[in-house]
Length: 112
Image (cartoon, rainbow, N blue to C red; front, side, top):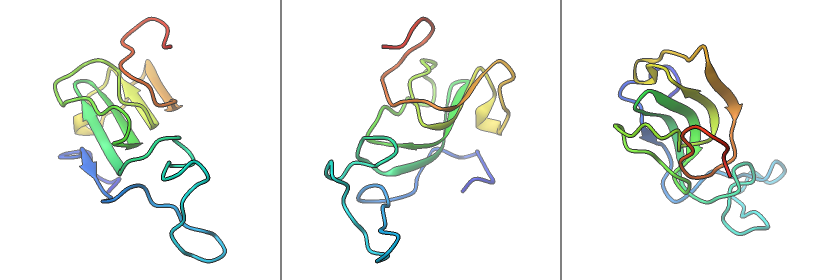
């Protein structure tokens, strides 16, 4: 899943995120219901979600997933790139960050 970004935009689970007990190796539910313990939302696991000249390596579809042609810096997760040819696997040298809290579009300015 991580080797290619094109076509990318892959939803790789069905029925929610994957959460296992380290001890029992059984699927469990977090104390906040069926919410992912890292992202704090529900949804399926998504890899290589590129949109316009932006992208995120790992996120959940329970948050905001920008359409392919939308340049709004709105999809957040782990491994974020802004202002890059992410559809073709290129990285940004100016605007990138490892982790972003899930929120709506935030093009420029301060995110609420």
